[in-house]
Image 1 (cartoon, rainbow, N blue to C red):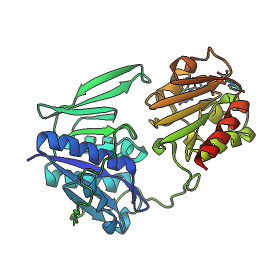
Image 2: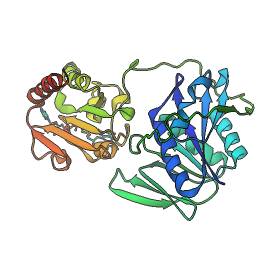
Image 3: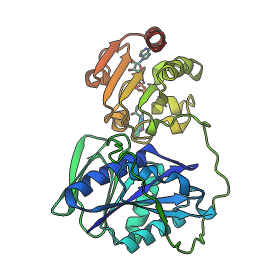
Image 4: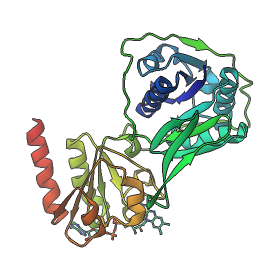
Length: 324
Ligand SMILES: Cc1cc2nc3c(=O)[nH]c(=O)nc-3n(C[C@H](O)[C@H](O)[C@H](O)COP(=O)(O)OP(=O)(O)OC[C@H]3O[C@@H](n4cnc5c(N)ncnc54)[C@H](O)[C@@H]3O)c2cc1C
């Protein structure tokens, strides 16, 4: 029986929803093909947290738990995952296209001399080969790719695939794997989290983004208030980031983060192609712009023609009323 090996990403001992999405998708592929889903959990002090991976569909959980693995280190994580892939003779390796996944998956493909497709928005199996869809040229075209080689490697765009507890209550205990040499030329001295506990745009289900139309950092509080009322993350266009109004980690787009939330509210932004490249996968797009001819107004699901300084506070008040 073949094996689909999944990188179950965690941070501070908390497994990420993006990882559950990949385990769930691996479960689907495995049900169609008779393969096993094996999740690899790498970290420190995470042994009692891995059980949930079984609920999302992992048949086995391989645990690499060591103080030296507390923080993501590209070299040691790569070595651990490659060892697990070789041990299990996995034919398919899946990752989430998070910041960590985007860094790790290509390193593993290079180390195993195999091929990979990144940031996929569709995935299936045909004749035992992984078939994926991924956007190219800032989302202007979509490529259908058949991945050759062994193992076949892909990373999946977060928030595109559903995280499904298909085996709720299933108790899979973690198997400790023998660790390769964890010596590394790279050492993580300190991890500084920008923005504290702020919700990251690439993981948020709702995002409220502000553009140049917000007119300055001092006005972003109205964007933040709407975001807060919706439990949403705050995003920014490159114009807002380049002007120094928002940190780069908030930037959505071709040179920022790629997001696929359920709801994307774009305030005072034109919807340039480079911004569209980062948010076109949003399930519902609401644009607020005073120019009815701004490019985003034709593409959005709901276009509100108006001054954001009037529209956004009204929306916030209505959301608050609704949620009371
Ligand atoms: C190689 C490259 C990479 C890039 N990568 C990115 C990227 O990752 N992300 C990104 O966002 N951009 C990116 N850009 C920049 C992109 O081309 C646009 O310049 C940028 O997205 C514009 O930002 P904006 O929509 O906020 O500003 P603008 O295009 O200036 O639009 C502002 C909008 O606000 C509206 N507006 C003004 N006042 C109000 C108001 N009071 N109420 C309502 N609406 C109002 C205006 O009508 C206008 O439509 C990239 C460009 C290049 C060349």
